[in-house]
Image 1 (spheres, rainbow over the protein chains, first blue to last red):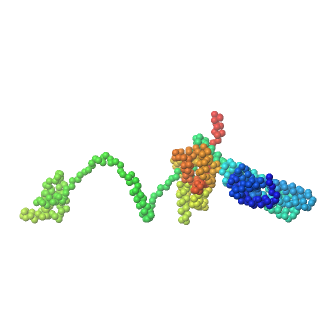
Image 2 (cartoon, rainbow over the protein chains, first blue to last red; image 1 turned 90 degrees about the vertical axis):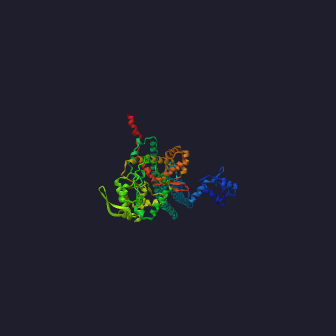
Length: 406
Length: 194
């Protein structure tokens, strides 16, 4: 395995292929085919081989990915780490304890300083890692709850997050205890250590507060899932009972539903409202609407539907009744040509049908009143049975008649 | 306030049809109505009670109930409740964590249908009475439209066909949770004695 002689070489190599590394880092979640990155190395597969030889890339068959150390390095610096590293803190804590012990036993000032520098380094690391871990844990919790669609996995993931959280809390408390109890940190040897310890304690304090909140969040999520589990189970059990027709027997489903008075459960009932007649009369818009509806009706088949059914048989039986009506004008014309008085004429006129005396008298009256101006009423009267009637003559011949009589 | 009266009428119009007003409705007008009820519940509730409707406060949704009821509706209610149970079972079979606020795409359900026989049968059972002779895609889209009409889901993104489960979904779940199942043990015990 090739090794870099100088750090400049490593940095130079990384810089030369920065596009390639950036692309690989962006796609670190998925396997990448080698052909896809070839344009980034000028289609020179030897370059890829070289990078792989230096352990910067990992090649497996035709797939390619970042070497895991490099990936972790990037993730940590860009603060996009998705895993919670509880052990890192523990490891740093152990290192602190070891170096502290060396420091206390060492008599040479130079070496003591070296141990102190290491202790400071690890303390700083703990500050970074702790804050990063808490942030990651929080993100993971929310993300798991919101995006994980598989119900069982979601529950398991959250349970794991909970134990991660508990571990993290344990480690943080251990660090905190060390800083609090150990005289070495309480009476720090120099101002720098004092500041570092102070910063770390602030960070730890903040982390603990955050962890408490995360715990509440996780518990809430888990409770929620628990509730979902209950609902899911209930739905399935009821469905099973329904499919086996046990619902009525073994549950109070029908009673429960029966007692519900909520509108969503019911068939919707429409309201019947009437149009306000005042509105129809006074509102121009509504009046136009009425006309529009009327127009539509004309076009529809409704008219066809409006045709009557068969004509009933009894409609063919005639129930007509005739009323005899004499043609008064024709009678008058005939009378004008006669030399008779009106009553005698009417009484003896041959009608097509038999006309009773009473009707003849009626006709006499009708004619007399209708053609009053054309007839001549004389002063004489005649008698018929117990009736007394005026002698009426046709107008033109009235004078002749008089002369004849006289 | 004429604006408020207008809203009261609109609220009545929706709720009296047996619909819900949800806090997470897609339609912003509906969300405003929800807010309006939330802010003026004490004022609105007696108003509706006076005309025989009880304004009910669900979990982030509102609906009406009415106490005076004729018995002839009972059959309809039971039919509806049974159908809801079937629908709930169908969607729970599809995804166990499907609850209010969740989103789903019909495409995903169709994919599941291909590999999940129980899901397939449930869908067929749900739709066979209403429209026989349709394919699964049509059956599913009819079912989805049906529960949209009932006010339990709404289309969030038409391009992606993403549907959102509204708060009213909780109503169906509550109904299910209210039912007591007689334990098999207590049921079998008398048999043992016999």
